Image 1 (cartoon, one colour):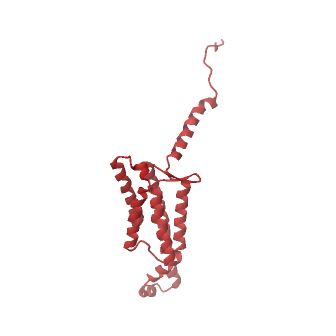
Image 2: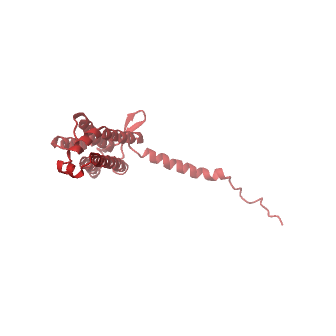
Image 3: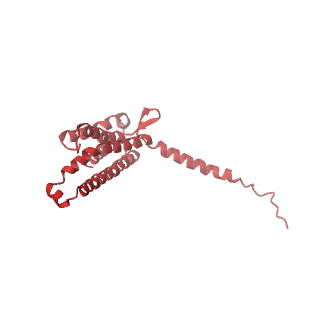
Length: 205
């Protein structure tokens, strides 16, 4: 016996069924990209530049690590090759830790831009920046450049450095005043607190 299908609704093909879901997924992805105040390229460029500056300072780090070995320790070790190995392990471990910490700075700053203050400013050529990218960039790159130029082992020493970090944390949000001047005072305070906290994290790290 044949079944009468003349009154049954036509079933759309697979492409038509999947189309709305494809549009929804695409809209979600595009919204996620639009929600990022700072361009991903800028974050990647900052991270690799900061890491490259750390690598450029390796000769100074090796020389400093050699001075930390006392004559008594050298006598106990005896073998110069073992001394060099100890120095290499110490410096290499420090570099790996620094690279990991820098990645944490980027992660925290991006999270703050997505959740605390989402405004951005165009930089041209399709690039844009949020409020916390300049904080991280100015806290990491200029001190590393100064350390490289003057042969310093640790650029985070001295009152001048901490005054500089504080100035960065307070002045960068002011560049976005047009975006937050109409916000509630609580949001503005949160912006400055996050900026100071992020700068302090970079300073103590």
